Image (cartoon, helix red, strand yellow):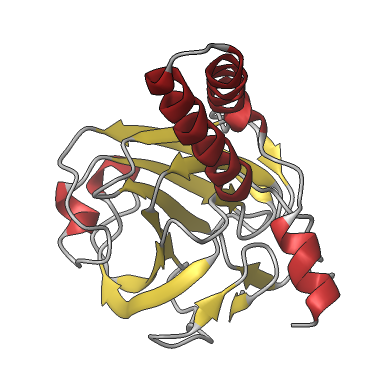
Length: 225
């Protein structure tokens, strides 16, 4: 990645979910500099640092979505921590036949905006409360708090995307609702601060990525549908 591309990524506009954090930390930074007390100065410095962190964490860069409608793209940035066959989440009513699941772990340094892996209609949204284990662990898929979406493709097949909260991330944001139509790469949610996103491919579809590979949400091709 060139220096210019790196700067564009870092300086990308923040996601709307950042607004309350930016307003609170910005106000704290201004108040800390205005007040004469030493503790207020410390608070102002801490608030300013948190303001900078939020700008970085909530960055929402534009992505170049592949034009081929028969491709499934990465639903999130991050590192692939597992590629294995497993039954889809029971709450999505997709049967118990194992399909390929690609699990992507997002550190606090990754872009946390979630994107649809393909064009289709959201036919099921299921929230499941749970624990907040390290999202890189395999058992996080079953034990952690999560929000699962079933996406029905134009040809009738289903795939699933699951937003999973992590050790630090305690808040899952999802703008997708049942009946909504999405294009591939379109934004649908966000998880803060550090998390995991699982993609369950339709039966018979084989992954084109491997464990350890770095994903770019909306751009990296994960499978041919």
